[in-house]
Image (cartoon, rainbow, N blue to C red; front, side, top):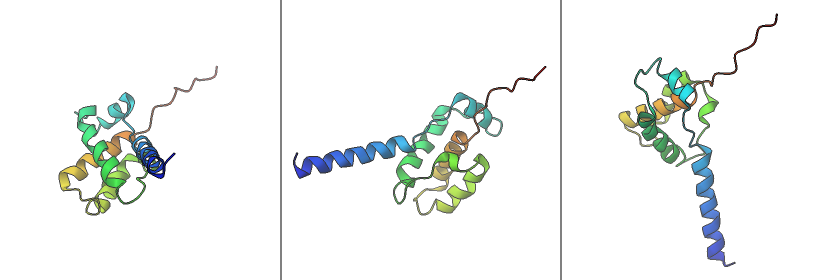
Length: 115
């Protein structure tokens, strides 16, 4: 295999790894939890923030896992990094909303009571 082909293959694998590593989408349960704070939150409203997060946050470093912080921690973290990621206020809000959605705890099974 030629050097050019190897480089193209490596670049493609790298891009695929980036795209799948941080492209989480919120579950219906996570959206339902988010709606307590943002009543009309839906997937279409979350998607622009997901796209910005995967493109802008991975520009300079490995983007953190959305699960690495609780939902309430993300707005201040995004505000801290917004100028470095070249996000305007609206874009920062979109990224925050996305991160708050996908970092919502998933409901676990209901514990059974013992007789």
